[in-house]
Image 1 (cartoon, helix red, strand yellow):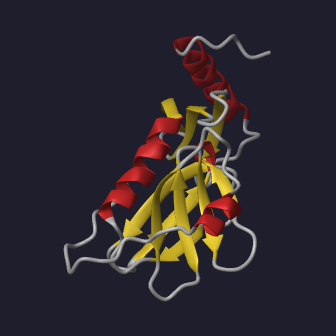
Image 2 (spheres, rainbow, N blue to C red; image 1 turned 135 degrees about the vertical axis):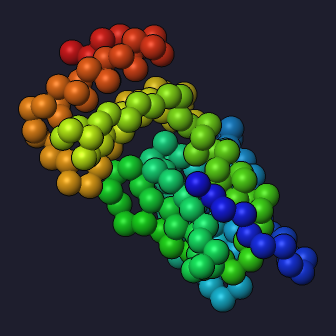
Image 3 (tube, rainbow, N blue to C red; image 1 turned 30 degrees about the vertical axis):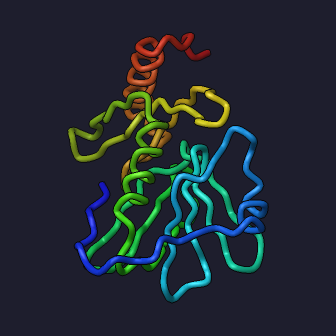
Length: 181
């Protein structure tokens, strides 16, 4: 969930130079939607149609596709945006005292655009949960099924695996994917 920043004085809109855009290495079908820039950092967060890119002033950009974003949340208390990943990669934490609300909305929209449907599966008598998510790779349109295990839930537990298999089969059928082998 993205919380909206407080209103304040107008901020300059971050821009990308032609060399910055070239460094992004965007596919022909991809385009920049928004840029978030921390005032005291040499990093920018570039929101494109197909990916989220960490763009340093110097060095190689790091791009991650939207279907790998678990969530992005801006914290008013910390004045920071944190992006977490479905594959367990280290979270990106980006100091943003006064983020552009339009850029935060673009980030939220891209994450939501990658989600087709999901099902939260309660396990261990409701004390744990597993989220099964059907997502779209926005660059290739490939449909993917992801399984995200909640804290303390063991993936190899037979009861958990049966519940996940049932939810996965239901979601695959709902979106027209063939049954899993």
